[in-house]
Image (tube, rainbow, N blue to C red; front, side, top):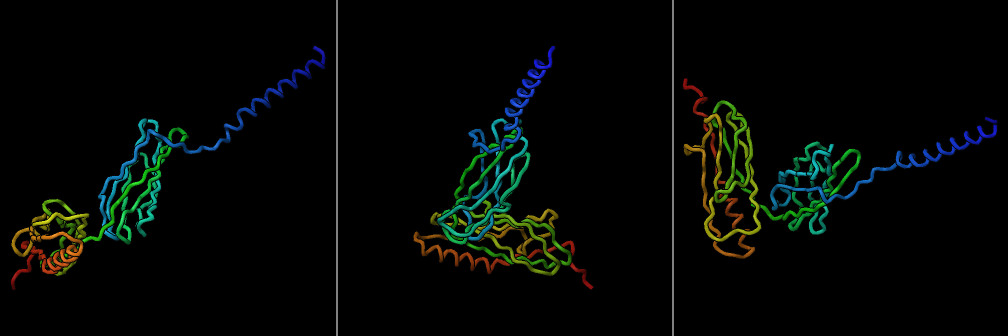
Length: 264
């Protein structure tokens, strides 16, 4: 083979190699731009009514139709309301392999409709899918019920459940611990968009697994009745005052019969 044909073949090989690199290089440096997906689902489980400035517990669930393909899920959450001011989501972003996130949403500082925007993502083998949804939460003025709880015993009470129910429906539950011979205030927030006229029953229950905590009346349940007898926004303020008055006279005493101080 003469030198000239060899030179020609060498040039052809170089050109083919350069052409091959020019085809593969853009893909090697391509940016992973998220694409909107119709196969994603976003659910926000929790109360659809919150009091002004009151915290609520929510569970955010992100899923993808072909879940076996997803390496991880993520989200960012933002309050985007024009109607109300304030409000927040905590944490406002995160990632997980399950797509399940526990959130605390704080109601806006004014009455109205608060909109929470969720931007969810799902990573599939280097490809990112996304979906955006908005959730409406009604912000109302909440009725505050405050209960004073006393531990008159000589041993601490730990992790006791205190529940408030209205007409048999659980409104809120809190866990409290009380030092010996001391008193704490437990505050409940009762929120509602409208209240039917007539009789309503407020029940506060102490659930102590050890069985040593009880009210001074001898049981673990206190029941109070209220009556809402007329419509009109101004009467709601009267109702709130009435409940607040009930709250002040509700003094719950925890007795620990097994740990009373022995007589001298």
